Image (cartoon, rainbow, N blue to C red; front, side, top):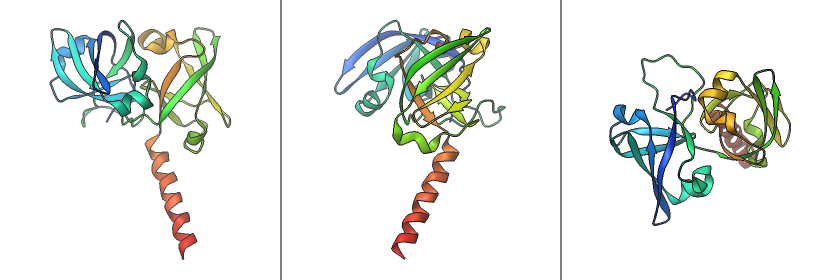
Length: 202
């Protein structure tokens, strides 16, 4: 489990095609603190470290992950947000993030507000019930608060620190981003769906 508080921005040193997916090599100083088998969130996607040595972490991206996340279109040299799993004895900043992406959004607008930045992101209609105003969302692995919301898009604001220490500050209109909705909302929605199904079958 993660918190959406990015530790480092790494760079893709290599993207090597494999059967149905590919292997990535990520240049990061987190390699020294990572062991094979460890989890690592890469732009909000939980991957398993295959190799961690010489300033690089190697991980496999499977066919399903390539289909439903932005990792299906990564390229050598691309910068990515990185976060290691949270420790049980650590302070919990951000919110509970599983690294299980629910869908991809599209950056529709960017508006400076002083040194901060408003970002408008369009999202798939299937996710509408999982967003609430002032609720949490992970965008490319970054924990953010939904400040504005309608049926097709939401607004978030990133502060100067987030602009400087994550990849979000380099987004442009039309870019695709990974979205993970708040896990608490998923459980509430599922419970409501089951209750409604039970009521119809009685």
